[in-house]
Length: 317
Image (cartoon, rainbow, N blue to C red; front, top):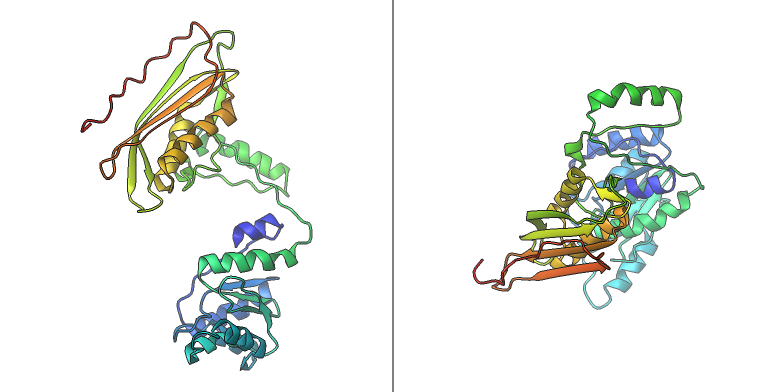
């Protein structure tokens, strides 16, 4: 939700998590709806006894909880070949005068009333519904975000950041300690580079990561591999600590061996534009089958020595 709101220039000011406590839900709804332009809820509109969000919204607004005829019609059509049980029909009850929010995934709609927008809790369903609904809030305002990585500590740069913040009141600057920057996905990682100190010379740089770890997207079990990166720099070279942090982002990433290998290669190419690069990954066997993936791009300059990969074929390695 926050990402979609940020994308259209709507600031998310506060997030709360509430257990199935009707009085607490009512209290927060009444507080937020008076305090903010929009209030979004997720979860609690399903068919079970603990789905109490719809009733709570009705009580917060002093409205009756009624059977919405259009919601009922959609459910009847959806369950035409099944049984529209009392529990399923519960999903058609909402505060009077509510406007339905379409659900293209599982039919049971969400609803909005005044400045409150109610969505289901199942992530895949909520995301589709919210992404479509949020378009109606887009007034053309935009936030612009820039991430800057540094190896300097907050104690070193703190005073400098404060001066910039004080000078530009409309700018928001936040700092996060580097250990918190290990992301769950490599896709948005910004790989730090430095100027090639010898751009007039052709030479090979090798990075070896013998404990590369990722997650199998099928079994959710960890995969372990040995990565060897060889590249001939152009105008930029990789900063080694940044590369290490980049590899760490794969530890919670679900991707096949081929995907991980190519992502590593493409990230290096994107930020350094090397004259030549080879990324080789040698994976520990799963189910008795080791997988080796070799990626290469560019033409290796003459007279540049590149060490052999020298990884033996699997024989109980």
